[in-house]
Image 1 (cartoon, rainbow, N blue to C red):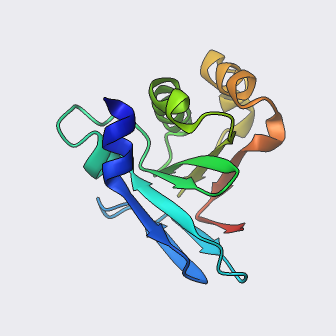
Image 2 (image 1 turned 30 degrees about the vertical axis):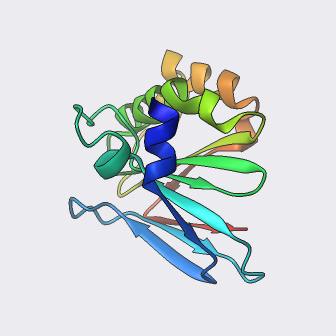
Length: 147
């Protein structure tokens, strides 16, 4: 059921540049740099996949490439809540992406206590699911993903 909804919500692109922003007006940005113009898909988890459900516990977007799925949350300053949103979406959808590498991206407007966030159970659970600390990135204001 959820996998069908994800397929229906995919937007296939090969744009050399793409910017994802929080539709609720947040200032954080996720930038995609695609010089080779590979095909990739943007999945709007918040406003399409989970449009009928309470979506404040789901991440904003997914970006699917040939070999990876990126779970993307654009946030103000609540890093721990952002981690929980990525983890919840990951747990509900990971089966839909098979053997693709799973990665998390959290872009926040303000990041005041990074050490505290990395000590939480949710952070540790997410790292375990993703498989490496390198697979999860927390950045302030904007982050550019080169694909």
